[in-house]
Image (cartoon, rainbow, N blue to C red):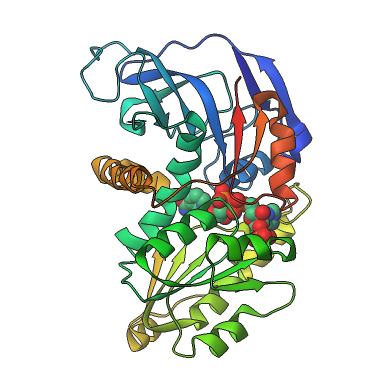
Length: 344
Ligand SMILES: NC(=O)c1ccc[n+]([C@@H]2O[C@H](COP(=O)([O-])OP(=O)(O)OC[C@H]3O[C@@H](n4cnc5c(N)ncnc54)[C@H](OP(=O)(O)O)[C@@H]3O)[C@@H](O)[C@H]2O)c1
C-alpha cells in the first residue's frame, strides 16, 4: 500500500511516498480502506516535531480517515459492533497513521457514517466539529444569546465552531487573516476581526463591553492572557492548541516554542474564583478515551448534519501523494475550512 512517510522532523518537503507492507488488523482493530483523510493542524505539528507525545520519525501522520471497513481483527466477530461490519462506511480517529491507503484502528475509535454522507464530509467533520462541540457544549455550556470569540475562525475547527454558534443563536466574534474577512462574513461571523489591522481585545471592549461568555483560543502564548481579558464574569476560556509555537517557516524552533511557553499566563485560583471564570483544556485524544461520550457527541453532530444545520466547508482537496503541498497550503495560512487528502 502507498503511505506518506515523515522521514525526519522538518518542513513539508520531509514527506516521502513509500510502499509500505499491507496491514493486518490486530485483535480489536478494524482495517479500513481510506477514501478521504482529514488534514489537521496537529499533523503539521507532528511533522515539525513540536507535538507533545507525538510519534518519532519515520512515521505516517494523520488522525482522521473516512473509508470502508475491509476486515475486523481476530477476537471480534463481524457484526459484533455496529461499526465493525465489512463494507460499512466509517470515519475513524487513529492516534496517527492515516496518510495511507489502509489504516488499522482500534474499534472504539471507529464510527459509522450516516447513510449517504460523502467520505470527504466524514473526514471534514469528525475532528473539527467534535473539538468545537466539546469546547462549546460539553464543557462550555453556552446558551442562546451568549457571545463567543473564536480565534482562527476561518480554519477547520473555526468554521465548525461558527456553524455550531449560529445554530445556537450566539453573537460571534471571529479572528482571521486579512484575505479571509469576506469568508468570515459569508459563514455568519457578525464581528469579523482582521488580526493584522485590529486588536481583538479593543474590538470586544467596543462591541461587547460586558465581555464574552466563551473565548476559543488555539493560539496560546500571550494570546491566552488577552483572550482571558475578554471574558464576561463567569466566562470561560477554552484552550485547545498552541499554534504560537508553530511559526511560519514550517521548521521547528526551540526558541520560538520556549518564548510562547514563557508568554503563556498562569491562572491563579483566587483570580478565577473572583471572576467566577474557568479555563478549560480541550483535548480530543483524552475525550476519545471516554469512548461512548464521544460517540454520543458525534451522533448529535451527525444529527445536525442530517437536518442541514451544519455543512462542512472543504476548502481544498489534494491527492494523498501531494500531502506535502497540502501541509504547505495550511502552513501558508491559505485555507478556509478543511483540507482533505483523497486516495482516488
Ligand atoms: N485540542 C484538540 O483536541 C484539538 C483538536 C483539533 C484541533 N486543535 C487545534 O485547533 C487549531 C485549529 O486546527 P485546524 O486543524 O482546524 O487548523 P486550521 O485552523 O485550519 O489551521 C490553519 C490556520 O491556522 C491559522 N494559523 C495560526 N497560526 C498559524 C501558524 N503558525 N502557521 C499556520 N497557520 C496558522 C491560519 O489561519 P489565520 O491566520 O487566518 O487565522 C491557518 O490558515 C490548531 O491549533 C489545532 O492544533 C486542537
